[in-house]
Length: 358
Ligand code: HEC
Ligand code: HEC
Ligand code: HEC
Image (cartoon, rainbow, N blue to C red; front, top):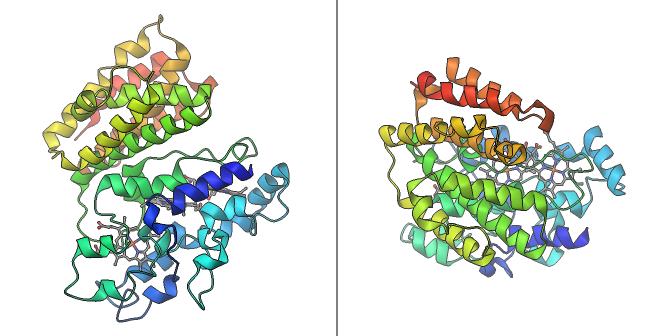
């Protein structure tokens, strides 16, 4: 267990090696009214504090549900256990020497969990003559591109250390496009047409990370997820050209998935392309009806089909609500548990998607 906690710590704090020695300054250092705790345009702190689930990500650790997970794992108090705080309140699990002088660990997932430890860039980044590239060179994490966002969020949203899920922790599903859309944005510039890029980047980051995990510890469930993701991404133009045909060589798969994640930033999507992509995915309905197909493989594929359609539809604002949501909810119901999945029913729902798009 300690090993897997270390793994997560590693993912969160060392996604970029230069973070290794840098120290956290706490959200209070971003909070003054002249900085990010001000009025319109300077109010990132308030958006985070009042509306963002990350600001209170630690509070669930005190709930009965967490106590039960803790009991199963032999953790006396999840609020204080590194096995939980590493994702729910990362500054609390950081070594003391990772906190700048006089700084108390923040609770919850605060600014630097995403933007990187502030020590080296805190003073410098406010100067008007300093460019985005210079800030990034000083250690501020570049979150402008979907691949970089994907690398950041995946640190907490993709891998659950062994044993946690069996102990009752909800399964983690990393869906970058949807999860970005569900956060109250404290930034400007994103448009709905960014969702398809975020979808591909997020899935490619997942594929890369799962391949890495499968290399370290072979696992049937992970291999099944890898195969499903590889199948799904192979239905996109960029995935088709970037990914190897087979998933056997995990090293090759990892580097190809990484290139795909980075390259996803460059694709320009239009409404027509998004609809075409959704239709390509829906054309798999016949496969779900084919009795010769392996039911487990089909279920794994269905698990990546639903978030794909949901993510792509974020780019079509008219798709919200109504018939579209009804069909998607029907598909999600199919995936609640292995016994609820009937491939033929799923196929019928999939087929009906193009007709309910705006
Ligand atoms: C790898 C990161 C990670 C670790 C380690 C982790 N969690 Fe979580 N946890 C999450 C994420 C991310 C969510 C949100 C899942 C979602 O809704 O998509 C979550 C959700 C939860 C929920 C459900 C919250 C809700 O609102 O439904 C509980 C309860 C919980 N975690 C308890 C724990 C406990 C107790 C531990 C330690 C034994 C722990 N977690 C360790 C990442 C983690
Ligand atoms: C869950 C991750 C996450 C957390 C936590 C977080 N941010 Fe951000 N932040 C982002 C992302 C993603 C962007 C968009 C970056 C981009 O497009 O360049 C962003 C952008 C910003 C921007 C640029 C605003 C703009 O108009 O483009 C500022 C300033 C900022 N964050 C400050 C903060 C502060 C202050 C906190 C803590 C109070 C915080 N962030 C917490 C993810 C996060
Ligand atoms: C340091 C760990 C950490 C990082 C980094 C992080 N999150 Fe989270 N996030 C959590 C935890 C823990 C929760 C669960 C909070 C709860 O349920 O109380 C959560 C909850 C969420 C939720 C609400 C539950 C859900 O899954 O729908 C969204 C949306 C979300 N995060 C999106 C993001 C995005 C997007 C990024 C990257 C820009 C990101 N997170 C980065 C730890 C993290």
